[in-house]
Amino acid sequence: MAVTAEEFREKFYRYLVSILNTPGKIQRAKQNFHSSDDTKRFMHKESFGIQHWKDEDALNLTAAVAEAHALTMEYYQREPVEITQKYNQKFLNTLISELASPIHADEPLKLLVEEIKMQIRVTNTQPSLINNYTLLGGGAALLVLGVAALASSGSNTPKI
Image (cartoon, rainbow, N blue to C red; front, side, top):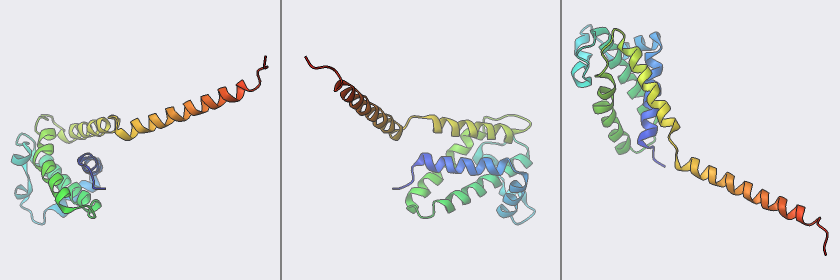
């Protein structure tokens, strides 16, 4: 079964939060992301809508997004390329800017991490069809046990 957009997004978000929360991972992401001293070349301030961020924060976000993207694509490498590319474009073109651009703070990455964590929690608490079937199956099992208990207790009643 192919990966869903929600699964892809959650995996990407989890990688991104892990990278942004760990200074060593941010440094490694920056090293992997750019190979020269021209860091402005590698910042995506305009495409992420974060022109108001400090250069260092913008570079850290851009590198972390690139690293999280690479890890997510590697994780889903056995999925159909058309599907992962579609999700990939959606996330890189819209989701990051929707999350990051409204943040105006001295430490925008901390606020971004909190927003992403909230997005993950919302995704995990939404009811799914599987949960509904589980509830239905559990309810049916209880009903069968109840009927069996009533049937077995009814056999001990005196007959008139």
